[in-house]
Image 1 (cartoon, rainbow, N blue to C red):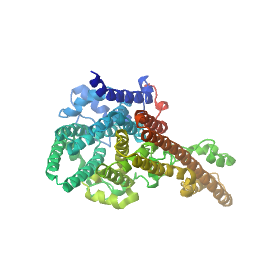
Image 2: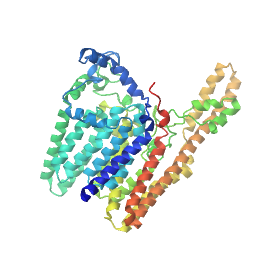
Image 3: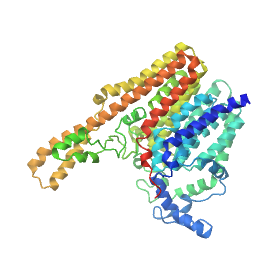
Image 4: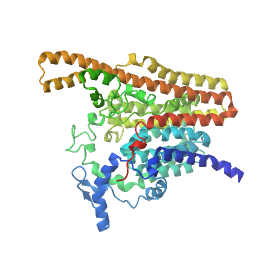
Length: 569
């Protein structure tokens, strides 16, 4: 009984901790309030016609007129009796209702994946917090992107099953887990998320193939690959109906060169300019480390008592600061940054320095490839190659979504780093050197942006001056001002307000750079404690978990908090 208790204690603690955090974050949900989610409300409106028909006649309609001027009903809401795996999982997913259930299951799923990869169950709690509390999750939950979120829940254990199949001691079990979670992943019905993770899995498979070639183990590798292929066929077969109908319908949409498509109707995919409209800016990628590097989200305005309001006050227009965007990135619109956590990124870099080549390079390669793919038209060479040669890639838009894989690789590298520290596998000299480099690089970047960031970037100053000059031109013209007044006042107020906008954006970035530096140093101290006092490793890992959670939680509530809940009425 004692052995059994010790075996299951970490799992019980992990589940209880994950549930507690999810329940605290979404506390109003358990008090009866609801979260108004735009996409969920749109779906409810679009599917109402289907539900009414189902209730009245006991069968689903084949066509509805409530979306895009009419479309097949099976693309909106339909019951597929053959999706037995997905249907069997529904009662389990309802054990913790959404939205709290989404981050709860995300943390649990990542923890399960780490157990498949032989990561210590206590160590696995920390990176699971980093994954489940990623700021991007809270952004898409607030928007109501539920299919995307469920795909991100099932992706980690699917990748864990692939790892077990290709590298684990029991490939049969790995194949079974791969088939199960890949079926759920496909059933979540967000092909783009699945596609990105399959690209990462392909890099892992290629890495394992190279190792097998070097060690002359191609025959066992081929057998494991066959098991993996069989698991994939089972997963596809269990979702055959929705995949088939969607593929048939795609021929008549913009994703297959329909005559209704904008741009090149014969391309067989989306127009490249349209598909890459939401490309993550190269400089904007610093949001992964510093949350408000680009001025937060598109809806965020400047403060009522900041430099912008002060610049407008002499003209009696201080309130106009509330209509100007703090965001200065290159995306048409964004709900917030893809912040991965300064503490998590420090641990990930530590993992790069401590983990062996076989575990390291495919993860680093997947991270870099996905980051560059997320840049879209800011790195058009690779984007065009992907759209031209990767099968099915030209069906997807919003390429910035590729960062979901980086959101997964960063906690994975952090887990590998903590595992090495936990097991004391490496000499202390190497650990201290890696700690110094990881803290020096991540902390040094934060310090650089905190101290000299104002001189490294223009924070949209030029664009702001042009924007404000044009805006005040329109105001003066509307008020009948003469040319002389317009010319004199435009230049002055445009320059003043544009400079104030840049200054306030710089201040936001600087504040968050100092914040990220603090979390890097504190997490480095926790790691240092594990190196200096191995006997205190349990307390050090717990401290690292607190820091990772606090880091992400503090940013998450900027975009989704208790204040966003409303009464059902």
